[in-house]
Image (cartoon, rainbow, N blue to C red; front, top):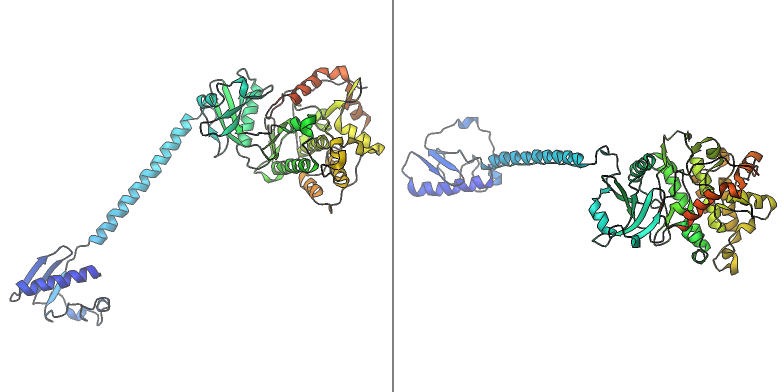
Length: 481
C-alpha cells in the first residue's frame, strides 16, 4: 500500500470516529479511496503472515496493518482506486499509438520524396549530404547565368559563380542543353561517385538539379580557381614558393590515396591534370572532375576502355596504346603534375620550331644527360628566396620520375609515394630510364600533326574552367619523326 492510500485511511478513520461511533457497519467514499468497516471480520486473519513490511513504511499503521486506535476486532477494507495503474496503462497505450503514427508518417513521407525524384534517378544521385536544388534558385544565384559570373567553359558546358540568399558562394556547372549521351553519362557517374566521397582533398559536391533538359551541379566554391592558372602564369607563379608547392603535391597525393585505397570503393580518376586540381582559400588542393572516373572492385588490378579518352600529356603509355587503365595510370598522371609544379612547364610543351614533346620525356632526357637540375623552375632558385632546398627538390623529381616509368608495375603506389615525399629516411628505388623506340616515336610528333590538339590544350590552360576539359578528345593516329 502506498503512502497516499495510508493517508486516506487515516483521514477516513477520523471521519468514522466523528459520525459512526455506535455503528456496526459503515462505508465512506473519499477522493483517494473507498472505506468500509464492520465489527465482523471479513477475512481470515489466521491466513495473514506474522509480519507486515507496511508497518515499517508508515508509522501510523500497527503491526497488523490497521491504523492506530482502530478497534482490534474491526477491520477496514480499502477497495482503493487503482488510479496509478490505470494511468500507466492509458499512458502506455497513448505513447504506443504516437510511436505507431510517427513511423507511419515517416514511411509515407519517404514514399512521397521518392515519387518527387526525377524519373530514372531514384536513389542513384549523391549521398545523404547532397541537396537537390530547383532550377529557379540556381538561376537567381547566378543572376540568370550572367556572363559576369562565368568562371570557365568546356566541352560539357559552362561553370558559373553563384551566391545564395544566405551569402553562401558556390560554383555551378551547367551542362549544355544539347549535351551528348556521353556527357549525360558523365553527369550520372560524377553524381554517383562524388556525392559519396568525403575527403578534404576532393572537391565537395553540394547538390544537383535536373529539370527538363537542364543538368546542373553545385560545388563548393574555390576562390583560387585551378592549379594551371598559377603554374602557367608568370606573375601568379612568382607567389608559388617551394613550401606552397610541396603542400599542393602532398594534398594531391593524399586525395589519390583516398580514391585508390581508403574510400568504400576503389576509384580510378583517369583524367588527373593541373586544370582539375582546384585551390581553396589557403591554396589547399582539391581533386575535381570525376566525369570519366571508373569505380573498380577492390581486388581488380586494371580495366580496359573500349574508347580512350583523357588529356594529352597526362595519359600513361599503356592507356594510350591499348586502352588499359589502373591505379598506376593515375600514378603516372600524378608524376606529370609533380614535374609541372617543379618546372613551371606544361605537360605537352614545345620542343623546338617543328616539334612538341611531352614533359616527362623531356625530364627523362635531362636525367640521362645528368642535367636534371635544368628542369627546376628558375623562380624557385632565384636568390633562393622561396626557401627551396636542392635536396628536397631532387627527391621530388626522383619520385616524379618513378611515377612516369614506362612499365606500370615499376611505378610506386600512392601510399609509398607519400612515405617517400614526407620522410627523408625512406629509401628511394633506383630509376629505370629505358624508353623503347616505339614509345619515343609515338610521344614526340610533328608540330603540324597535333596543331588542333595543341590548340585545344592551350585553350584549356587559358580558360578559367572550374573542373572540366573536353574529356571526349579522341586520340588520332600520330606520325613518328
